[in-house]
Amino acid sequence: MARMSRGRRNQQPDDGLTEKVININRVAKVVKGGRRFSFSAIVVVGDGEGKVGVGFGKANEVPEAIRKASTKARANMFQTAIVDGTVPHKQVGHFGAGRVLLLPAAPGTGVIAGPSVRAILDATGYRNVLTKCLGSNNPHNVVRATLKALHLLETPEQYAVRVGKGVDEVNSNYVVGEAHWSSQQ
Image (spheres, rainbow, N blue to C red):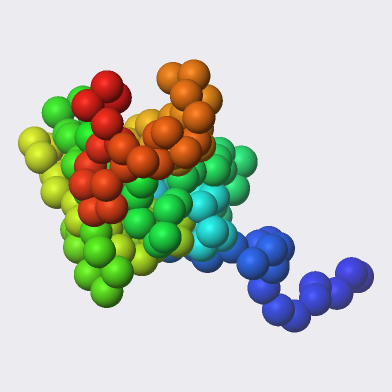
C-alpha cells in the first residue's frame, strides 16, 4: 500500500510572490434535502515591484476555493507603472456601478484605501497612494475597477512615446504631486 507523504499537499511554489485573500463569500443553494453551501474567494497575488494579478475561485470548501483563485491570479498577472512608490498620475477605474479613484501621494503618506483596494496596492508594491471608492462598495466591482485603473496607468516615458514627444519635454510639464503631465493629456 502506498504511503502518503506528510506535509501539505498542493503547496504553492515558493516564487517570492505575496498572496492575500480579499474576500470569501458563502453561497447557499436550497435543494430538496436542505441547503447546500459553496464558497467563492477573491485572491490577489503580487511581487511588490509592479506585477499583480487577481483571481476568482469557487468550490465546496474554502481552502479549495482559495487555491483555485490563487492559481487564476498567478495566470492573470500584469505589469503596472510605479514612479517613486506611487501612481504616476490620477486615474479612475470603472467597473459596473463601482468606480475607484487613484491619486499620487507625497512620500510618507502611506496607502490610504479600503481593504479591497489596499490589498491590491500592497501586493503591487505601492507605498504612497490616496484612493477613494465611488459608487458601489461590492468587493467584486471594487477589485475589477482597481485593476482597470492600474491597467490605464502609464509612466512619463510611455506617455511621451504615445504622444510623440521627447521624455525631457514631457518631464518639464510634469509637476510632482499633481495628477497630470500637461493640459494636453
